[in-house]
Image (cartoon, rainbow, N blue to C red; front, side, top):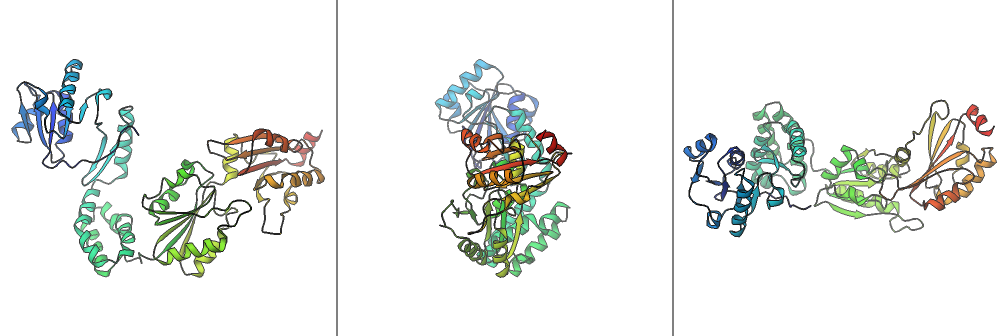
Length: 458
């Protein structure tokens, strides 16, 4: 970021606006929504500005302008409409030590005016660092549709009740209480205009010591982080990350995904490297259960989809045995991302009409019989298969699949370091080595129907 977003307290502070025309009125209109004092430097004012002065909301300074005109200002807007005069006034304001915004001159702006969504006391500011104001306005319009007009009144009510919540709702239950207020029945009542009903529900919950739905009980979410790129996370996954008190994440989870979590959420790495057991599954199970028993919201963040080779059943069983609420939040699995990355579908009408997800790495002491799944008309998506590739290739050849059978290998699908190779059964090992493909990688083996197979063989 070139600019740092910050909300400034404006009570009893002065904002100076240099200019008396429409551009100056636009800035004055914005500042007038705060509690700042407004001083306008201009010998002549357009009607709106003149009306603000008559109403006592602003004062006019029609005298000569110098550095002293800006002394003590919390913020200065320069909006005369004359480029040369704007430049000169900017220099004077900077000499006085003020933060300056010159309208339509990003190069002369120490402070940038964002697009604002106002639901006082809830305020959303959208900035583009002066590069794309039209985009900022478009984003503002989108956010305006997401936030109901009376949302500020719910926020203001909650502010008046914070002390009561601190007195009556135990600390471990407060986050769940506020989540219930803003995402549960009170917010829903407020949206439909039943503000008194919402207020009564909130006060009753405070008197009862917590949210009526048992807020405060621990919760575990087994969340799919997708194949890597953070913009492939689902909206529900992002929501769970933003609600989490503690996040246990895997080795293959991209750090960008963790940036979407609450800033104060605890993050615990529980990754397993190949051939290492620093974090055995039993220990992970015990940890997530222990944290949830404290009343915390736990996210177990897994790469891809937690239900596909993610050992999710073991963690589900541990949570259920402890009597804890648990949910699965699915994610984009690596095979889907790999196919998308190379611009292909996982199925093709008339050739491959089924998809089989399989792992080439089983439980200790076992080797999955991947070749047994090699049925004509199938796309075989193999996870964790690079180390077993020689055995897989040999088994498929023994089953009669020709060396020309198409195989696509994708490493680190969706990430900046993604690699891929389009090859054949006969050449796949050499092509993967030449392309630098290593784990994590997915193999997509296309096994066409018999008619298509005969055509390939012929």
